[in-house]
Every structure is written in structure tokens, then in C-alpha cells.
Image (cartoon, rainbow, N blue to C red; front, side, top):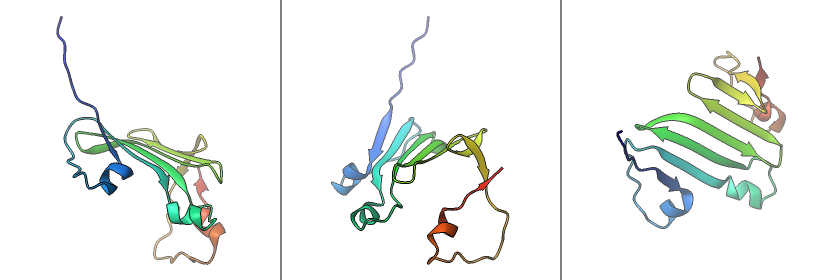
Length: 113
């Protein structure tokens, strides 16, 4: 019987803010930002999320973004596509368009498959 040991690492916004140097290795690494969009939250804007990602061998394999204010859960996994609240999503296919930053609705719209 063989036994293998590996290290699981964590990178968080707080550790980076404290001056800890992040060294990305081939070890499985969780990257976590518990309040992504802090200034938006402070100013009452609903563009706030909890962001979690998993990297293995320096490659992103899983991502979860949850916006509790808009009840939006974005998930993506290598080989399984991306989803919003469990429904598949995709990019729009539009090219050369400029996002109207004054329109929150257009920013938050997602094309469902």
C-alpha cells in the first residue's frame, strides 16, 4: 500500500494585505476573497461577491463567485462550463461593443444558453 502526501495551500486577501508574499506552487491552492468589492459594499452598490478559486499545478480548475445581494451564484469548472444559479451561461459573441457603464442592467445581464 502506498501513501502519498501533498500540501494544500490557501491565499487570501487578508494574508496578502499583511505583507505575506504569495508563492504559487504546483500544490492545490485555494484563493479566497471573502468580500470582493469592499468599496462597493461600503457605498451600497450591489456589485459585491465572495470569490473562491482552486488552482492545481498553477492552473485554475474551479471558480465560485457568489453575490448575496443579487442572489447570483456563478460557478465554473474545467471541462464543465460556467453556470449562473445552476443554468449554463456563455459569452454573448458580440465584438467591438463598449459597455455602457451608466447602465447597471446591461452590466449585470448574462446570456443564458
